[in-house]
Length: 263
Image 1 (cartoon, rainbow, N blue to C red):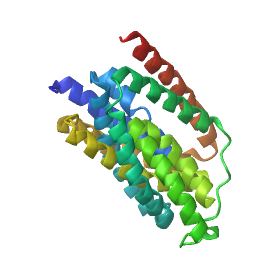
Image 2: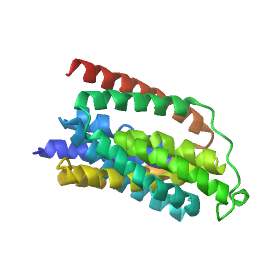
Image 3: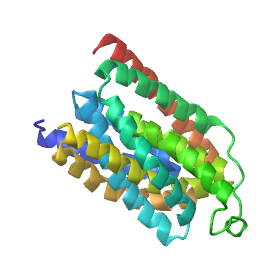
Image 4: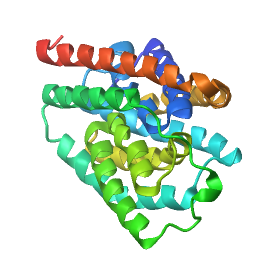
């Protein structure tokens, strides 16, 4: 795929926006990556957009994760357990997605986006104190993390960045984490699932390295803006989530219309 300098610049802007949203909202913040690549950058093949978004989002998630880790917001044991079990699901989901027609894949992706938006409209659980969560997950929590991780990984592989909608609620349900803590921990899985998904698309010849690098470079700036924003939102985080959820649902409708009409 041959891209112009303008397209690479737009890809960098897209990466900055995605990294900012990842820093603020965790895994669900990456859901706009594919629509941005398709309709702003001008990537023609949905499979190529999914592969590039997975790789770019993985690198952007690592940038955001580093900032949250420095601030001490990441619960590493449950985050790594969830990610480790989800990698196999991500590989299987990505392999399946590559066999699906592009338009059908976009319709499924639009459905995943609506799921993300509706999930973000639900009232957030109160944040549990960090000390209330054990450093080593119990056997039961590990089993819950394994099941939720495989499901989240399969969604992440099948829908690319749109599958991140299951990571935060999966971590919350399995461990009792509150929203902010789960959002920080979710970035471990976003990076792991994105890298796994990107590897399968690269093996199939659907990954453009220049596009990925442009997104990653833009992501450095986006994360630098997003991390302090996440800390400052405070009481306004609920309003911000609702506004973002509305944007996601509207974008999903646009993606669905484009997929049906073929425009």
